[in-house]
Length: 240
Image (cartoon, rainbow, N blue to C red):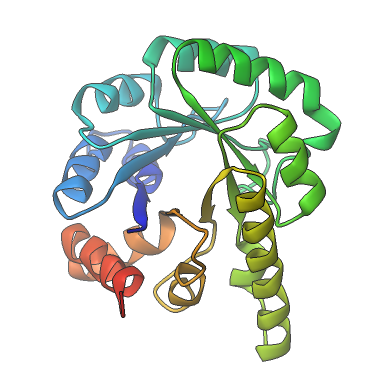
């Protein structure tokens, strides 16, 4: 069965807009788990624009499934991850001016740095996932960097317009997943997935996990978080 990992960053974004205490991203994580999420994702950015250090500490205390810490491959974030001990770290590219992560890591150009990071995490039994575009060279580099998993960037597929472009981007993802599986890597997928486009991606047999945040939080504004998570799970498990 595929796992739905719910990203709760946007609850922190809304909270921070007023500088108050609500909505509480910790409560969101607990509701998501109780509603069937198999993991909780949060991205501790260098500028702390949404999740804060204290949020991460509290999440480590309350998350009962699996905590996935998205982070840049910096010395600061490596130190925080080793201290907090999430089950998984997902290494993502990060630019301060971006609204959201814009693409996959260039693992090829940063192979030795990422390999060193992976070795440090493995010493503490923390799994490492690298967020990459559906590109065989990057996936092969992820394997050589010592990653346990790759998360395939689905943003181009999510932004595709028209059937031809949609099918082209879908094939890239499918081929990348098949190659990653041949390499012996675990496979996740995420970015831009929503209640319309997730079903097709969820049919790719090699994908074990789906990481979704924005669309679930957006849907939750109308139906509540518990219902939003359950509705996404219904899409993922349809026809199983």
